Length: 233
Image (cartoon, rainbow, N blue to C red; front, side, top):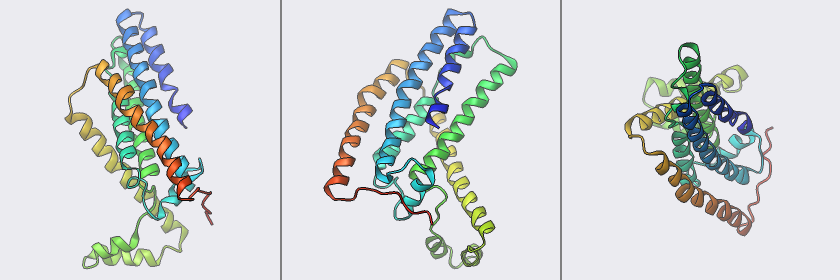
């Protein structure tokens, strides 16, 4: 998944080169350097989740979060992953200045498709994916019509169709909330210069992530909580 998402770097580089303009080519080089820098942050954050779950299977990663969502024990990494996702999408788009019409539309479709993908991945890795605490929801909404409706749905979870529908709505709602926050933050804060963006990645975010990569295995080994694959049965 990470390898496929990294292919966008080639698209940006070739778009600037094919424009036959040195300004567009320089813009594509700058955007490529930015993408590579922040993809290192995102892949390092995913590595920490893998260290906790002991598996590369996304379903196992979700099932491991039945006790607690990883956004709580890994709150700094969750914030860094979100910041890295926003910063990765903050391209000045100098590489597409010579393109118009359908090609221009394709670039924007790819940009917002990557936003949807990264928000879904964020909800899977840190927000429990399709998991929903039905008891907590029923307690909060116990005196409302929705609360009585949710109580009836809990009793009908043995039906795989209803269970799949609820799981799909849950992960869809989490992804929609993340997309809303993502675009909200992106529109609220002004763009920072390219050199500041790169310096923030290499001198602030990367050392913090590396420190957690060293810290988390030490904690896991010290408390003898080495993860094993969660049974999905």
